[in-house]
Image (cartoon, rainbow, N blue to C red; front, side, top):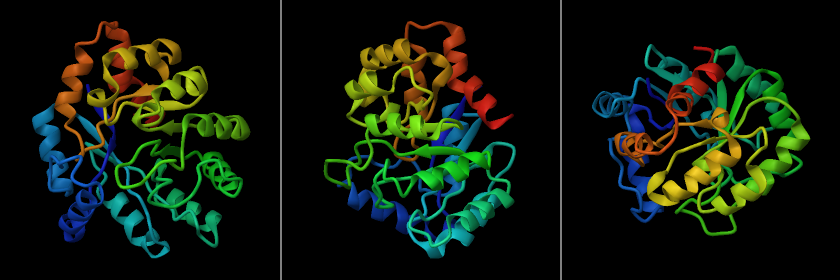
Length: 264
């Protein structure tokens, strides 16, 4: 079984515009493998051998809170689970998080670059803490993003800092803990309680770096993710399955850890 913990889709009426805008911002670095709709994601799942996808919406305006979270809830089904989102510069984070919880969504996606906040800003800690205490999983974009310039608003040391300060709940750092920051992941994140997802992907960090991080962090805290439509899950799965690791480790990363976190 394969659970892709990090995917993206957009409402049909805005998908074409959203994909075009993101491609332009990234300078075309990551050509999309679908049209960005839910239908495109499911079609890829069928072709790529993915059983369940977790959609990770990003809210960039306060006005998107209700509509985007209700859309996220509406797309859930046998093969789709969706996280929700909040606007981090909200005037009432408790109200907004309570709304996400009321819909029955399992987590929140944060993107420090597109949402314009520093990961370990003291102002963000009460938001994380309240969401975690409500039982939500927090998944963060981590490190490099082609649409933005360094220094990035998140890094492995900052993830370690917030994990220590919050002291509980599930925090996931995407892109194996920090895009283009994998030596720092080994130094600061491995061995902590922070989960890592594999998205964007073996083409960038390579097998050797992944195996170092796996050995130092453990298979229990790594989740398979593709960042679809910006990466092809089938290519990621093929490389992952070629790794010299145990079947037990593969099962945990491809689906077992996700099942545990999502209670499925």
